[in-house]
Structure formats: C-alpha cells, structure tokens
Length: 325
Image 1: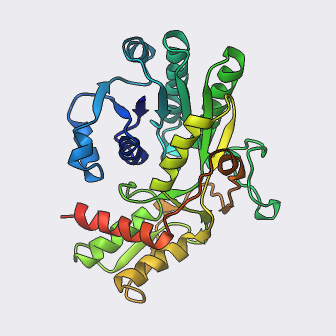
Image 2: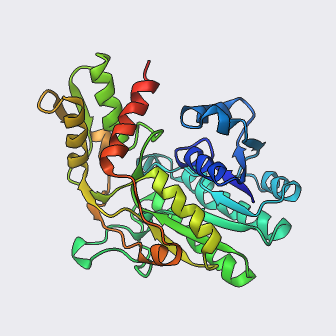
C-alpha cells in the first residue's frame, strides 16, 4: 500500500515511516519546502529506510497546494500528523496554531474528498481535547465531552469535529486518533521529559551547570513509547470505523517528577543536581492528570504497548547523547 505522512519531519513521522517500511509499504512524506529539511529525519531513520522514502512538497495551510498533492498522487491512506503541537506556544501564537491545525486539516480533508474519496484519512488529534478531567472521574473514554483549555487543544478539537463530520456527511473513510502522552527518541527539547533528558546529557558533557530547569513536576500522565504509538496508528488505519475517534495511550501513570528521577538514577546524577522551576516551562493553565482508557482501540486491533518506560527513557537519553556533539 502507498501511504502519505504529513509532518514527516516532526517527532512521530519518522518513527511511523520506519514502521510502515518494515511492513513493506511505500511511504511518501510531505515536506513544506525543498530546502533539505527532509534530511533531518536521518537521526532516527536509518539509511536503508531513508533510501526508500519519497518526498512531496506542499503547504497544508494552502488549499491549492493540497489539491495538487491529491490530484497528482494516489494514496491508499494518509496519516495527518502535521501540526503546531506545543501547547505553551499556542498561548503566544493562537492564530498561527489555528491556521496550521484547523485550516490545514480542512484543506487536506477537502482535497481528499474532491480528488481521492476512497483514500483513508487518519487525523492525529490529541488527549488535550478532553481538558482537565478530574482524576476521580476515572479513565477518559472517547465518550467524554471535548472541553479544551488551551488554544492548541481548541484548534485540535475543531479539526477533530470537522473530520468526523466529513466522514459521516460525505461517507468518507476518515477517523480520528487521540493519543495520550508519548515520548522517545527525537522528541523536541521544549517538551516535558525530553527537556529533562536534554539537560541531563548537557550536564554529563559539562556543557551546563548541574541545574535542571523544570516545569510542573506534579503533573500526572500515562506515558507510552512513540514506537508503540505509531503501531496503533497503523492498525487503526487498517481496521477503523469511519467517523470514529480512538484513544491511544499507555498503561502506567507517572508524575513528571518520577520520570525525571528515573533518568537521574540511570545517569548517576541522582542527588547531584539542583531542580529549578522555570516559569517559562509552566503552562498558564495546566492539566493536573490524564488517565487513558484505550479499550476501544485495543479491542478493535489487538494493540498493546510493549516497550517499557526504562527502555524508552534510556533510548531518549542515548538519542540526546548522539545529538549533542
């Protein structure tokens, strides 16, 4: 099968490309401009896989650009990952966030509807659309109302609703995934967990004083490995019901502080560094806890996460060790 990945130069896209290639599929990545950025993925995509990738160039915020992509290229499925995905940035740049996440998704969905209506579309929404659900209400299912509390989540909720409406109104094979927290190699350093790993490696290389700037360490999340996450995306694209939303999430609940402690133990820095709260890393409005119920996805596909958190964190630290010269 031939799949298009939008956002292939982001965090999740390269891992998804690796997985699809391992399943003998043809993979095309959408890149905004032909300035060589596609080579960025080589930090997690081995040369043997990179040589099998094809790249197209286009801007999801430009409908005519997306129309050309889908008029000229025939795909069995699209994994729409491209987004402004950093919640704190969305408070600073709400308009740009909405253009990328909401308008960009409308453009892709409409281009598929017009030029390739049999093409399956997975829209990558987010658990953030549920907002701050109290822990006592139990694990979050897909039946929980959408109640976003930051501009990023609002933009994703709008696109989430639009994709599911198009699926029902136009009988299109579209569906939505709502992934809960995931991390691993290539996660950007401005995101929690990876920010800590990045600083730990800099301290070990003596590029930074033994001080780690942190955000809200009491925040609780179920965290999974990105490589488990992309397998769920693939299985759902093969077996989804049109117009449905599917939670994708891990099994174990951690505080951000616990994950940081695990990495400090792994590197021998436990008790040897100062943790300093940086206001820039604290969200204006935070979600204290998120617990995922992914029963719907698991029952449909048989998917379960298999990579332990120890391995995920070690691989993340190894990634930054290689990346920081």
